[in-house]
Length: 252
Length: 252
DNA sequence: TGGGCGATTTGATCTGGGTCAAAATCGGCC
DNA sequence: GGCCGATTTTGACCCAGATCAAATCGCCCA
Image (cartoon, rainbow over all chains, first blue to last red; front, side, top):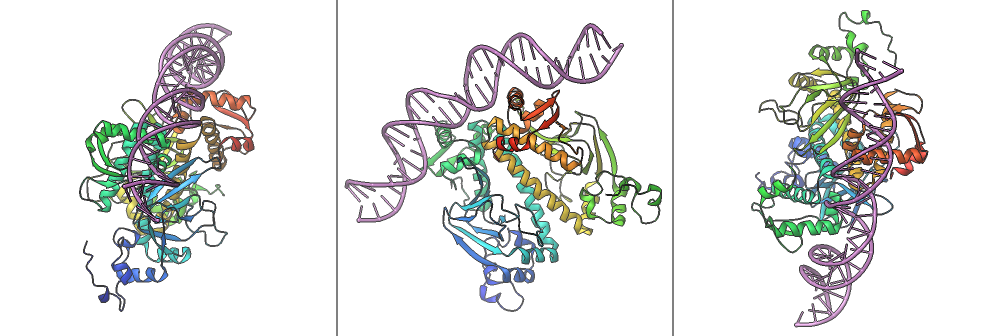
């Protein structure tokens, strides 16, 4: 919680690296599993990378890329087909971990293919680690692997919730659920103490995430506004919303 | 691969427990991570349980139950809502691991709730381990946790494939994909060397798995038969199927 | 302040799959 | 072998959400 550490104090000896001491996700990403000394080792492997909205980090079908932490911004994990259909299978927020979609430990053999495309949705900042170096550290620091397991289990949980949404919910329920999810994410990000927040996705991306079309998403949002359940300024900024009512609309 | 171990040889001293030596999933479940000695420890915690088709192992909302390996049969992982809508979020086959849907390590605090119902689809046999005992062993034998991570990553992969199916595929594509998945599972189970296999689910469960209605599933299967892509005896037994054509119908 | 362009909203119409209903088939089981 | 309830198939019709088309909005920049 205390982000006031003086970087100059922590650059020498075996202390916590300066980049990490001021890193927004030091205590929420996988790195939270590491002591300052261990973090120092990991940091030596790492490099930063920035992407602008719309830039693509990996294409599905590419050789497996490096691992990475999301430090800032939002990215989407997508699968597309030739005829233009597209499904967002996950959103990546700060502290999320990237690069294990195709599993671990492909050391010897030819690297497997990335199953999904990863594209920046807003200004994105990644902290990247080479695969083999990171896997080696994971073997040395079991807490790291343990944290990854935790994280993977909760992503599985989220994916299955989304299966329920995509398989059985109505358009109205889907949109309500989506807004609740975003509000929840934003609250956990600590971005807003109040009730107002920005939708990180445009109508098209929302549609691709909840399995509808742009038009249907738009109409459903209009409905929610008419019913007084949400209030917006512009297309992206939610000024207020009645969580209780939203939950009722969301099909649990 | 050699299942001819004589149980009488392995009951004494620190050797592999007899139940395990003849266990169908000794080398494919999480247990594959353990040596005979380690397995012996785990075995001391375990008990077996059998369920008949339709019997329920856990209800969603129940307190977190024990962990378990599926030894034999098939179970479904479902979420239902009051109005009767139902979504199958996963199928459990022999060697699958049960009990981590709500995460690990809730030692001290009140046990969390199971998010899904688990129900036997065929005659089911489970090998059950108490939560705390198993978690303790996992801490002592990191290979066990590593295997669980592997397994969880591939379940996440499956769940995301299903998100694509539920979000963007047509009825025809869904049914074709489902049949391919089952055929694949059956091949990996080594249940059939040939091209013929049983569907483990009735039309209703298929519908709840791929987000359609019974009637639509039935119509689509009829279509596939008319096109000569599959051939069936009765409603459940697939006699032959043209995998190439199925793959084409499946929307990749 | 106005002009241009992409994103969003709104409207009109169409359709894939849902719903409701009935017939056919399948498995047990005596 | 024949009867019964459950499952599956088939048919007729309907509707939520898709598609196609046309405003309208919001934002950047001059």
